[in-house]
Image (cartoon, rainbow, N blue to C red; front, side, top):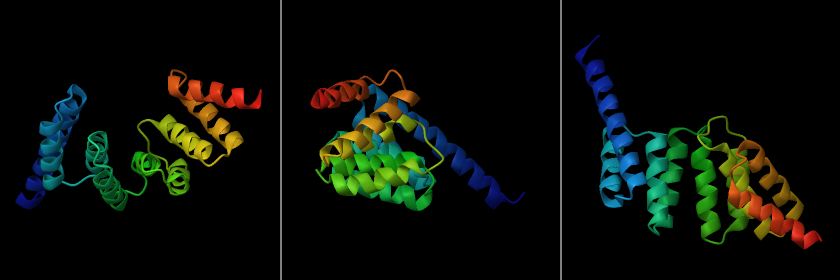
Length: 166
């Protein structure tokens, strides 16, 4: 093993440690230290997950355009990470762009790697609902519940859509 590969492995391991610390800080509500830690992790060893988590933090602080850019970078690094596609769709929903959101969320549905797969279905349900496609929305919310029976927002959405039909 050469020194370069050892340094590369050590750098990646350090970046992963920092990413995990950033995520803990994020969950604890320490947003600025979390943002700085995400940035350092990405600087050391850019990963799709790092960019996706940073995007989430940015979106929660109202920086949706920056969040979209981070998701695009996450997708460039790893097009199979479904969370990046799903979050990108969710951020377009926040901007009121339900048609564009539906495109990204449909792509997310085709991906194989997810941390919370039910979110893509719930977000696609939101997009279809905003498009006036209630049956498609209902199907997506039901798919979300099948994957995560505790998803209260999806359950509420199903009840509201069913009220429209009654």
